[in-house]
Length: 385
Ligand SMILES: Nc1ncnc2c1ncn2[C@@H]1O[C@H](COP(=O)(O)OP(=O)(O)OP(=O)(O)O)[C@@H](O)[C@H]1O
Ligand SMILES: [Mg+2]
Image (cartoon, protein in one colour):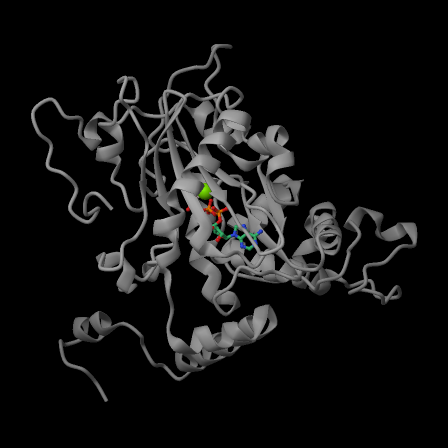
């Protein structure tokens, strides 16, 4: 690495700072969403299914609490009297099925639920889920530290527990330009066609994942994505650089609708296969995209129009502080050990944990135990026995 990314360069005279960051347009945010770019680049990315989400499913994601449906197909409530019954509600003689409806939220989004079941099967039984922009990486602890999902309830548990997913749903257009597009319309969150992206699960070799920054349709910076040191990368850097530039020129340079953007690639190589570059994701050219070994300030100050310009490729060196792995990704989102242990048993076990926890809390409330210290103090300032 040429500079230590933990100490961004102080701005010198005339240098741009993060305050000079050009706000992205809402259209640019839409263009970097998976459902949008996937249409164009299907052939150069991993196998996936894009499932359009209904209002009912989005309401389920946004609702408080986590109720998981059984992993079986359901039929809409309106179809009940057609003689077809849900796998979870086969008692045709029962008039009072409101409990079952309460228990099975998938009754409200049978098409999406069914499409998810079908996609998991088509993609070989295990998938990596994400919404338009983000994967629920901050919720991986809910499934024992993985995003590998083999059932709809695994997916729902991750999506409903993730702040990154909430960001996609509620804050996708934060810090964007509020100007109307060429049709004099301002894209609103309600105009976004949300989709659940299910990618075939791959055991990714994270040392060969790279993030590439594009400015004025030129690759200006490339960084390793996994913040650990790998000896072999130093020698293979020139080959990876050539592969990335060739991939960009062939597939993205002239076709991506934005001049500034960030793309992620995966370049696995085995003894049997040649290196092949796969597109993993496209991200907005915006402060919310993690710059990893660079800082945005550095990228803002790169001028690709100079005749001698060359992109910089950074990897983690042996003695870089990042290589010690002190930084815990998404640590602000982590939970106590009991929760992590429960999560190791999968969605069912996590739900059991949640129910047990509720029983404990209800018991404490019934026994008159108050969980607020300040309440005690209000009643005299001293703790009571
Ligand atoms: N199909 C897959 N199977 C298994 N792991 C995957 C798969 N796709 C991606 N990953 C892993 O998950 C990581 C994050 O994926 P991705 O870039 O799509 O998420 P993201 O939410 O857009 O991340 P970021 O916020 O950094 O842009 C990848 O770096 C890769 O290691
Ligand atoms: Mg991304």
